[in-house]
Length: 314
Length: 173
Figure 1: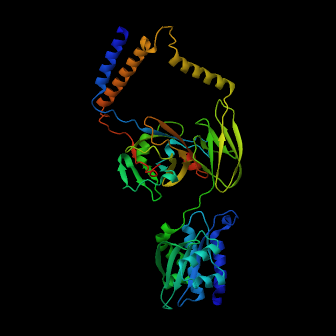
Figure 2: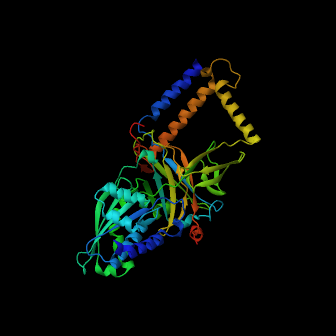
């Protein structure tokens, strides 16, 4: 295995290139690791091109996490010696991976294609995800790294379903007492309430909620890896509070007191029945008009949305 | 009692008159509003958008929309279920052109209705809207909760923001 030491060093460099500078932050999610298992007839240069291409091609397909190669000679030796999935899972975990792609490589014919068997495994348990993928790199693709990466790009599509999903970024849920309020996070407008959770980088953030007629609400919130929720209660300005009180009073009066000075129970008031009759007449006219215009018959005007199955027993 | 009898008679007549064909179920209207530049990086002109996508994403706890064949409607409208289990409604240029409202910035109403009775036990899905010009994504809304099941006769306002670097495209230039 010692003869693969230069290869592994090159892999380390390739992996860091594939990861890019933005992925070097300490809080980035665990990477997808490529575990090379060199086999029959493989020379260093060929393996280097194939593995570099594999890492680059995977990096183009994996969202939200880096792709890294296992570069330690002892780790590769331990992987080669693995006889079961559990051992593979331990090697992936030791490399700090969220999952691993075991790449078994061989080239039985020195002038022929390089044959790859790729399989995605879970970390720790080593349970395989999906089927193994057979791929090959023709001799002409082994001549340069770009050609090799291009040759692997298409076959790797079959592995996509087995790759781990992109990691969820922490999300902040801003709950307000009023709909239609403008929500800003760190001064930037993110939408209006009610708003779905907003994905943010972990750390402290300032939430500002504003709505005409209400005092602005400001909160500072620490968003951890698992996200956070902040409740912002909007206090009405004096004139808004007065108007809301008037509306409440008017609504209450409409149901409790006839407001006309009539005596007796509500159902004896003439204006109530006039209103009911008027509403029914209006509804009837609209219904007849719609039916006459061809919009009736239960026809739908719009685009159908299928139901969400939900979780059984909810 | 006479004061009550007459309206009751009228009410009965009106109810009888309204029987017969079922009235249409009112749709839920999604009010798409292009930002006028006060929120995002630039205003979105009515003529700048030639394709609109509505993407409805179930809450993770509720799973995904079940797989469904792609459906094609009039005026270049189609709906499909994405591989991620999202319901994607694509409004093509013919539909957008015919339905965009005359205004300074982009405005359009998109009617939706529940295809069948929906389970009220699910969480609210989120909706996001994407504007395209010549196949390029130029503007997008933040995800917004959608009351679920869909409430017939209600409207859902969605503000779509021009993407950074797409100001020229958004202005129709």
